[in-house]
Image (cartoon, rainbow, N blue to C red; front, side, top):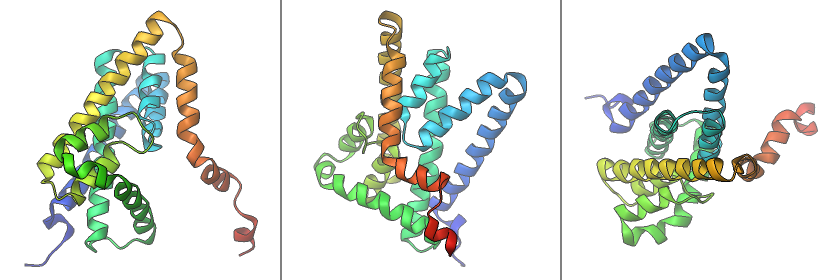
Amino acid sequence: MKHTILNTIEGRLLLSGFFLSLLLMIFIGFYGITDPQTGKILILVFIAHIFGGRAAGIGLCILNGFGALPTIVYNFYIEVLIVCFTYAGFVLSTTNYLRNEWLIKFMARLTGKALEQKEKIEPLGWIGIFFFVMAPLPVTGPVVGSIIGYMLRLSLFRNFSATFLGTLTAIIVWFYCFDFLEQRFHMIQYLFAAIVIIVLIPYLKKIKNFIVPNKGKKDN
């Protein structure tokens, strides 16, 4: 039988990511037509998650009056979608199903981050992945956590259950911490601004190169 991407679990996971993306586009498109302001916020929250700003996305929802359930569900949905793509892309690139140069470089960076944390998490197994994903630190999160789970040879169920439970727990904790600050101290705006700055600092050089391309590259 001929081996194709769709014959692998990761291939079907990648397909699931496309399906979830389609649903997300329909959802955002609906609000873009019926409530443009909400549609803009939904897009900004998605962009925040793309840059690894889980807390920033939650803060945006709270600042714009989203309730607990919509905030938690929407942010969790985005995290699941991102993991579907990154986990599938990582496994498929390492097993030579996908050989795109850009993808390989991107996955190499994720691999480096995962390897830095692997030895600390390995003795704890499932619970280690859970706490790693839940922790509010720059290098933590479901993307790197799921890749570490793969490196530790956890089954897909154990890996994703730890990754997604840790993600859901983190989102709930972030929401109620931010909500507490907003209700009692009205300081979430300043905390949110600090988080956005911290999230963007590692990407400033890339953003600058994107906006102002390198002169040498232009000459070529």
